[in-house]
Amino acid sequence: MKPEAAAKTEDIELHLFLEAIYRKYQYDFRGYSRASIKRRLTQACERIGCRTLSALQEQVLHDPSSFSQILGYLTVHVSDMFRDPDYFHALRRHVVPHLKTYPSLKVWVAGCSTGEELYSLAILFREEGLEGRTMFYATDISADALAKAEADVYDLQRIALFTKNHRLSGGTGSLSDYYTAAYHAAKFDKTLRGRTVFSDHSLVSDSVFGEMHLISCRNVLIYFDRPLQDRAVGLFKDALVRKGFLGLGARESLRFNAHSKAFTGFLPEERIYQKGDA
Image (tube, rainbow, N blue to C red):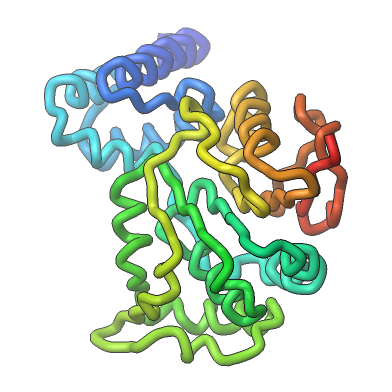
């Protein structure tokens, strides 16, 4: 088969595969970046031993137990505590003073993965005296990721980087104050998630579930195509209170987004935006 014909066949297979899992399992990846999805499914085929996406589709449709394994390839769970420390430093110095004017707060960590971002914010809010008045909502489409987030246990080898990031983010104490180490793992203080609701939520198909003062959704939109990015930011716009804050990843922005006019660039260099008065 000629390369162009093979590529066209793969595109057809990818379209059918994404449509199949949507109809079978109600997980909608049809608006995700095709290049990223194709790369990850190619890895899945190689690891599982399927020669084509059509073969993988047959397995997923007829063996539901294999879907959780495939879902692991379709969802990206790469994060660190206080990842991109300048972002958290900016929150601490410039956003927290605004948040302190509210009697109560709601924070949504959208696409929370295995919880590193959530615990980073929980620690920051504790250090800034805001934890007691804040409810955190940690959402993801992956039940496995949410279970790991709620377990709050991380490989001890990762703690050195977490500690460095915490210090660079302006942390006021030692990260070791928040975890205990044993058997090559670090178990974080369960009180850090004492004011957190963990929940399944899809930016593709679900709706707004509350009024938020801060939404942190970092390194999620880069996996979406333009219409799905517009939908997600539209959800954030509707969820935020007036003058609420939205934080995105270092490679993400609201430039060209359909809802960009609803926000001002509060700290655009750190990808922190503020909803307008309207």
